[in-house]
Length: 191
Length: 191
DNA sequence: GTCATGGTAGACAAATCGGTCTGCTTTTGT
DNA sequence: ACAAAAGCAGACCGATTTGTCTACCATGAC
Image 1 (cartoon, rainbow over the protein chains, first blue to last red):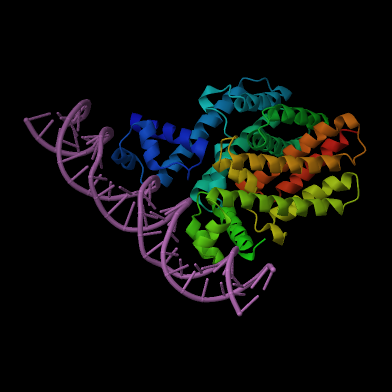
Image 2 (image 1 turned 180 degrees about the horizontal axis):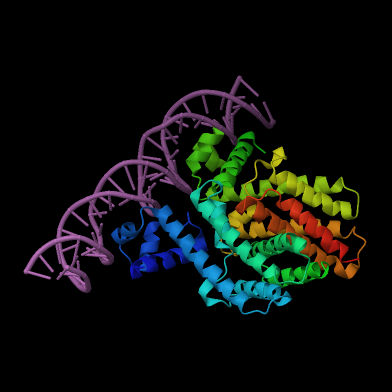
């Protein structure tokens, strides 16, 4: 990938994440990234195409970060602990690669592109699907009845998304720890 | 309240809810509401002031709707059942007064106004605080140890917010029922 | 050496943005 | 009845939007 292209994506992400996609103009991205307008439109057909590339970039960053954190944990309940500890680090700006917390970028984009049929909205749906699959893989390492895997995965997803919203909208930076506590209660009740 | 003022607020809400605040221009609101521009700026100092009024309007609609639903339920676990049944009705467009589901308007607005110090962001925080208090009142009718009221309230809030996100971003319209199931497990484990 | 590629700065276009204003009509309170 | 308030349509303003275009420079492949 071209260096300029990457620079455009990272600058655009930073601005979109803070101010929303519609709240940031092309010219602001150019000023921040120090790239010429012609170059931007050489790499991307339109602003929407840039947004799509930014979503793909963030999807990759976020997924790999979480996957690495989870891989480092020992199978079982520690995997679930690690999931919420990782979220806690994210919420409290202890993960440099994720940039200062401003909620979930994919939730934010869906707020602006509300139509579920919109390509950008679908891209966000896809991201969440991938993360949910990652969570399911952790749940499978738990010593619980196989028939409970689906429902526990759903519950953990609910808690994760709820924690993100609490942290962002309510400004409750301890949301991940609350979710971890609830997850413990939940899994204990499965045994 | 003036009829025109109300018309402006309801039209603006409908458009903002579907397309996001920055995705809707003043002129579109005027065309949809059939109100003159001068009249809009007679009632509101700026677009931000209109957004603030729309938030207040939605806050009132949503709170009163949920409060009525919860009041009608018998104290105890039925209150919690009713909470998630109400969400299920909302997600599946069975509540006319809330308009077709496009996620939580307050979460959406926070996505566009990411700065927690922004007045519109704070207004959303306030709304969530009020809803959380309403949930806490239901939890108090449960026959659980008083020391658990806080943690159960937090857990239910997490599940509620998570369900909203799952329903909107993932397009999972059964999210409220999954959350209800999880809430049951959780409360059962408190006894 | 030559030529395509990717890059620069920035003028420019057409549309739209939020917001102001004029001039006129309708409604409403007393 | 009459004056004040609220409403109308829409022209207009300056700023900003996305996107195009011209003209030129640097680099590297063949």
